[in-house]
Amino acid sequence: MKWLSKVFASIVIVALLVAGTMYWLGSRDGTLVASSMPDGDASDAIIARGKYLAQIGNCVGCHTAVDTPEFSGGSALKTEFGTFFAPNITPDPQHGIGRWTADDFWHALHNGKRPNGALLYPAFPYQSYSHLSRADTDAIFSYLKTLPASDRQAPPHDLQAPFNMRFLLAFWRALYFRPADAVAHTEESDDPIVRGRHLVEGVAHCAECHTPRGSLGGMDQNRPLQGGKMPDGIWYAPALTGDQDGGLDAWSTQDIADLLLTGGSVHGFVVGPMSEALRGVQYLNQRDVSDIALYLKSLPAAGLKTESSGNVNDTLYSMGREIYGQYCAACHQADGKGVPQAWPALDGNSLVKGQDVTGLLRVIMDGGFTPTTAKTPQPYGMPPFRHFLNDMQIAAAATYIRNTWGNKSGGVDQRRVNRVRNID
Image (cartoon, rainbow, N blue to C red):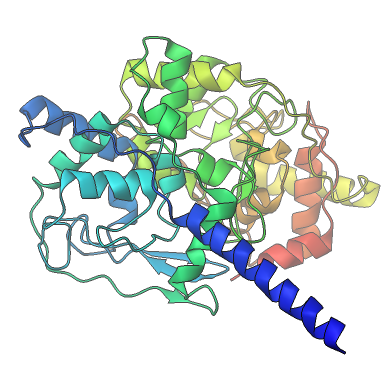
């Protein structure tokens, strides 16, 4: 039995060495870039730049709970690991970031660490913010310092074990995170596609929703922007690649810009969590929104295939035609073309043709409104059909619109509808 003890001891030693290595990899910092404001003073132009970046990054959306001062924290993000609460980022010295330095703020965004060295949970998207330049982080910090201080304290995270053990983040970071030092040291470019990539990967943090994640919540870096399930388990963020099925192949740069600035395009309207993101990206200036659109259109197709819940059932399709004529055609029109600036077209609609049907079914069931923006102050609305269409009827309607006009996206069955209906 001595040999067995030796084997066991060897396994333990190897495990400790691996754990120690992963801890070191997960805890290390990127290179500190010198502040763009060595004297600590920020000009009005820098503060204005910081406000703009905070707007398009929608910092206020995550860091403001309902009926509380802006940026005072407390907004909840529900995930399969538990509920995260965004912190207060006003200049309050006790509950906010009033005692932070510009270097502290840089470390939080670039390295995912608090001033005391504690590791931040990746619910804060430092994987993306690590791509920001030091000048941009300094500008955002300078803007935040001008906000009214709030002494509101955000609730602690409510996480399931073992995810409530913060030290385990070192292992997660070893698997999924490396500070983006190469980007941080790169001079600002005048190339529109390079600028667009910088915005998409950095302050707009598009990958956080539009890149698939693994079982531990890490982004799959081998499948960037190929679409992914949202943390709430309800909505699906579509691919931003050049794919025909569920991607941006049919979109023009103007279509992309229209969606980001107004919440709608000829390919559909914003629904679900993207409505919250639009609260910020609607403020993109013309150059930045154009560069983002050019960058996204430069992405190649990834070979994605639209989800099909099975072959098209003729009975469901026929039932769906009748339901569409009775409930949908008055707004979306018999030819599925919709009404510009009012009700979106369903022919070629990205949500209808998407890789995942969850969002489409939620819209049919729950209706709702497109987001209000400066350019669309009176958005269109859709009534909910959850309470007077059963699972078969909703499956029929979805099957019909996914396989009519130019759409050929496969059928939807009752079981899928029932699963979506019962999501909390």
